[in-house]
Length: 273
Image 1 (cartoon, one colour):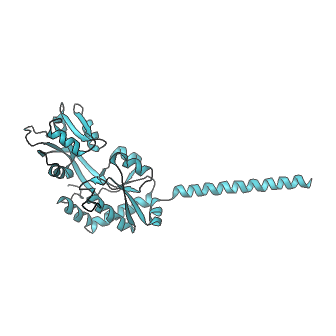
Image 2: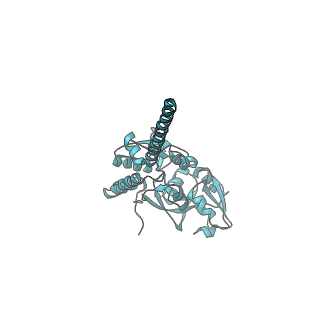
Image 3: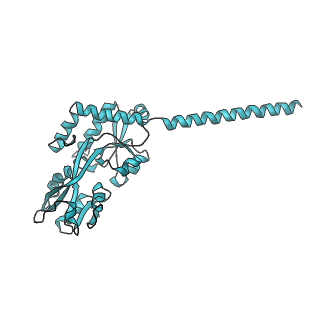
């Protein structure tokens, strides 16, 4: 009789212990899932930043093979405001959003425009760049494409996976040709394989200057303005607040204006009125 009672008692205690362990595990899992990205970044003392590193003048390797550019400077300034060290993780554009979602880095600072589709999967900081789409044409081309509607029935070169690819395809009738990047579509534009190309107005003069091809800036596309911000994974409210505060402080102390003037000769960090 005692052995039966002891067995029942032991089984009852074991059940209670098991339940407690499960509850504890559940609480630990809940706490882990509720942990904010800001806590882990502060604990590590490092902000991991996704960047292409092949996209001048925003992020590229200079003469000493070190990363430099406007976005590189902005990222370093944000990390400094958070009190941590920046650690850059170079990633191809086609994989950079997936890399962020997989936790390979904490943020992307790589001219990522805010779009409704991206906002469904990611959270964004307040914008730190305001820009627009601009066309590129051949110097000897007498035609003036003043809008995307003017390109209906014509071939337009864009980078694969870019906002401009989506923008061009939103206008029926344009023969959109996609390329790995700007060097490829600019060569085809100069060779008359496409009639125009489309990129960020911040990039156009730089691209034309460095391509050494007979090209010229075209029209800025009306209604195609864009806001560039810093994306990060969802459900990190403390981190979101800290990133926004860092950018706000960089606006107030003049750092963003200084960096923009350094790289573009004008302040592109404020919305046009």
